[in-house]
Image (cartoon, rainbow, N blue to C red):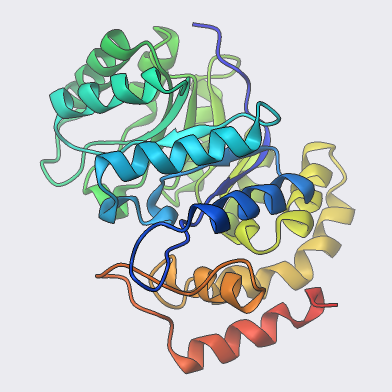
Length: 294
């Protein structure tokens, strides 16, 4: 499998909702333009940050279609597709493929907690039946199971996956993954703040939450690291670091969607169980965003 390479910053796109709870496709199209014009490198609709768990299958297809139509081939689009029922995942993956999706970000099966062989077989079956290029999303804190470096190496070696969004939080694991899969797997940070460590270990970028509201500054920061200019990257990080912290003081995407509303990019509407950020959180968001406001 020869996949389109991913490098740099991929924004885990927010999904705008209207006050009645419906998807605001006009705001979504404008938001995609905002991302592209401010220098991100690829787009990731329908991930956790996009409240995908509350979107119906048809809504997911419609959101992805709007993103792809607006993007018009300018950047790679990696569509989020999560689940723990392999047969259902295959069915949805085939529908994604039918609307033009070629790459998916798909989380390791959650709640039923398969062992390493079960995880391997899940991805093998999904790739075989859909033909999609897979970015595996490893986030033990949400799924309840870790995809171990040896399993990732096996999946990469057999061409089942081509990239990983690694959010284990373990630098040791990240280093092992990069060493075991060098040249076979694109490693992307799944946690904004640990991106420098991932890149130093051999990673190629980040699938990012903060770039929803600061696409330009985050992209410039990551580009300097990929170019090896770590002195400059440290300077660019100084105002970003408090933003990384603040955008996660409540469950994601509550603070970042509040920040997006503050910037006029969309309304701060959510679907339960997500709720609007508190006044205290919004005050903190305003404070850390000040260095970036004109």
